[in-house]
Length: 433
Ligand code: ADP
Image 1 (cartoon, helix red, strand yellow):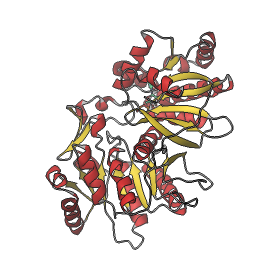
Image 2 (cartoon, protein in one colour; image 1 turned 180 degrees about the horizontal axis):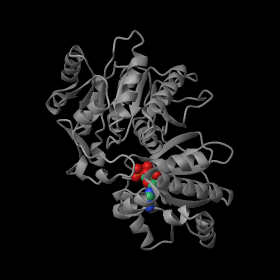
Image 3 (cartoon, rainbow, N blue to C red; image 1 turned 45 degrees about the vertical axis):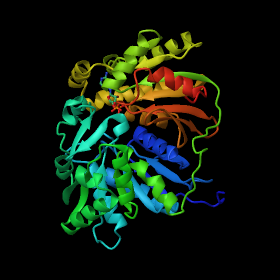
Image 4 (cartoon, rainbow, N blue to C red; image 1 turned 90 degrees about the vertical axis):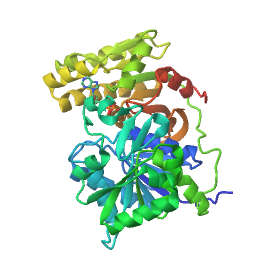
């Protein structure tokens, strides 16, 4: 039986919204009841919960702002009773040379090491179920190196170096190390030994290789006593077992249950990733879709109103509103309008469409794009999400609790199969497989 005053044990800080959702989903699958918050809440979380995930929007902001927000999240999580902390970033290690993975991880280590002793954390973005593996410090997406995976064309964080030790070193003050595949394959004791050696050498952050879920579980076990773990959501699969072993949580097969919600549905796509391009193509071949043109937005044309009119004329069926375009088209628009300005125009437009759609009775939103999801969730005034079952790996269906409950499926650009949008809509209606 669960005691009524059970406090969360694991406190997570994610650098974007969909990443937070992906992590929360992993924890739910591990039997941990999980609530995701949007930003740092002003109040405490009520009710029984095993894990909390604070979703920030800190991936591409200034490093010092990312640090400040992450430390505020850490303070809040400590206040909720969490005893271990997880810094979650993208499984494609999305960052620039200025940060923010290294600076935030180091600041969290400093804050947790209270005596100034330094501390240590692994850095492991591997997510084998989604094709992300790390070998000798190099990140692969499927069969391709990160730098040849399409990520080299990302609008905000182009990844052109697949060697993560090098990438993390460029954005870290202290020495970055590697826990190599052979060590991980040798088990948790071997990893603990490698960590002790790295620490003795003055290393505070080390990229950890992982090729399989078994590797991730080994890493999780080896990090059971470390206050901070950093990585993609994959490495979190090893954490629930640590808490069970320590008697801090009990297995819960109802961790993914969600309340029912009725109302109309809408799909919004603001990601320009390969996967989203394929999903948009699959949808527009057979179902109604309206394209948001960034140039028309820049000219101040009534794009939002036109999209809403399109939604109204298809009231009986869900439509797709998308800005998604091929990489060549995106870079051309970025050259004309500026990268940040183009991104903001599109995000603001999709957010405004979501807000107006809600006033017209839409209660289910499927959203593609990390930044885009953040903008939409903010526009809808959502601050906490209960996490349900996964639609595709890393993407759960969720319910925003509050006066007007809403179903949300928030997808990071590169996630989901080609038929993701249709499948997400079925899940939003209550289907579970
Ligand atoms: P992902 O999860 O694929 O990274 P995001 O939503 O996080 O997707 O980031 C995509 C960024 O690209 C957003 O800022 C979005 O507004 C912008 N964007 C989307 N479509 C276009 C386009 N056609 N032209 C220029 N920028 C675009």
